[in-house]
Length: 238
Image 1: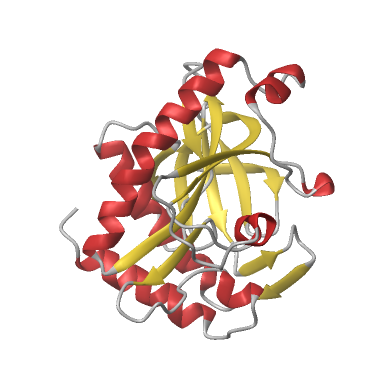
Image 2: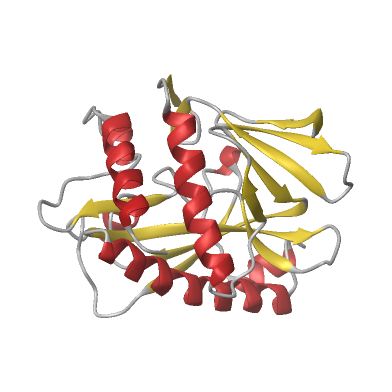
């Protein structure tokens, strides 16, 4: 049973519960890009991201990779473990796309011979800059041991999600993982959501974008694309 509002962002609200180490995530119909500079309300979008994230986080849990997700409560809400946020993002790239491609001067969608794993400081005012482990530790964002655990977890979770999406005929171009410390156990776990808002997803046959880039690049049909992602995942035997 949700109680008071403890956090309100563009895309989600977080509520406390009667359990001190459990929270309820409520997904809104808002989509943002470019660190909140571009914003819109899309009817039904929150329902889709809630359901997709529940499938993906639940799948990682079942594979032995701990996340904050416990269960989906209804169309818009999830019960989750309460965490202390680590303001870092570990991004796994199977292709170079978007900002990464432009920074390195390669064609959008360039496929390297290796998997690239980046660390970003989750700070909108600074533009979520790339940082290395020494910088993250110097800023007191995480210890070296915690950073090693975050990278190890991301490197396990990335291939699992890549294969899962492949079964759905979708290429996982990149995925962003956020982490937090479980307030009850202190364990470092994947937190926030995994959805087309936090991944780049391309149709394997057509190359059609099925993620937030549809909003970033003014391609339209954001909700239909997210709906297609959900429909394909729901058909899989997970």
